Image 1 (cartoon, rainbow, N blue to C red):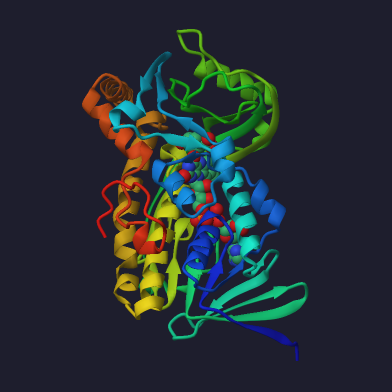
Image 2 (spheres, rainbow, N blue to C red):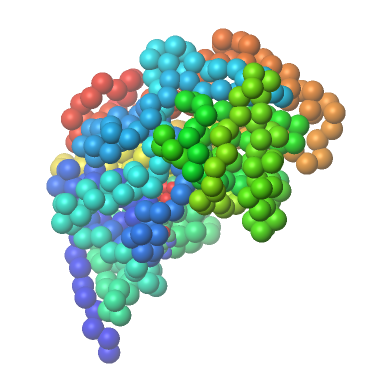
Length: 415
Ligand code: FAD
Ligand code: PHB
């Protein structure tokens, strides 16, 4: 019989993406033990190119947990962004519309690298390359996470499992179908994203509505531009040689004021499907889902990583209350508190997506209505204020102090 290495911990965390790593650090700061189990290699997790926009609250949170050295050095603070409609660029002045708030452009891979470094410094366990990860007995007081690592079998016995393993993970499927309600919308397009060795030609993001479809200009550093194009769903990347990508980017993004992105060598390209998805409740027995494991938003509103951060703040507060005072009330509230924010972000992301993309099958009325929507959005201070308030991120419902963090200036946290 194979020898099984048995671990005993308080919280077994499945997945070392932003949700799992951030939760691990929040628990660490509260003296709560955890084991993180990740099925990919460390370099793969760090190199995966994904999100870029951090809400003000996510920046404040990274600051409060002290994992902000890289963010302070290399994060790019943006006080506005542009919406370009049929060639006219309009600036949304985030800071003046929100009383001084901003977003920060800092790659998700940088956030993940910083959090992995912080985890390693704590000397608490983090397993990469875990195989056959399985979550069992979540209905019992002692769930078990099993996996193989370097040819050896492991069993992590714990009080709680945090399912932070993303949309394709094993935690959500460990919940019986009858116990979950799924809400879903799949969009009839995808995003082709590239990283290019080109100096960003604008200091701020540009969201473009063009007759040929949506395009987005973003960046990663003073020498790297990040760009996206709306393409048909399941578009084979082979259909897009580099010259075709640049031709289409320039066609859609070139503005009447002469602005266009700088062209450079393409160093990465991929196609991402677009989906809105929520699984409720976010808790089953002693398994708590967080981040993409529980919900997906289309990337147009830049909310996915930020929602993952908000979830684990709520979960850390609940676990702190349980271990310090035996209080199970906050654990019971976890799903409802998270879902209030999740549904607002879902609505915002759906709205940004619907407003800025061309939909197959739309008629001339739909087109005129969409252009009028954008005309209103870029000319009404009330409409821009609503956009700005949601884009920089709605206030957290949970205070940093209640999750065991030093109090920093935080807007309207109520609990
Ligand atoms: P993930 O990052 O998916 O992490 C889950 C982890 O679990 C992974 O490391 C995975 O390898 C691991 N895992 C999976 N299965 C298992 C298993 N069986 N066992 C163990 N481990 C497992 N969000 C924003 O906020 N702003 C943006 O600007 C933005 N832009 C985006 C652009 C693109 C092109 C894409 C694709 C996404 C974007 N997002 C954005 C969304 C954001 O990337 C995700 O919401 C975020 O990664 C969610 O973090 P997570 O930790 O919940 O999940
Ligand atoms: C990015 O920089 O990758 C990015 C920016 C804004 C979005 C989505 C992605 O809405």
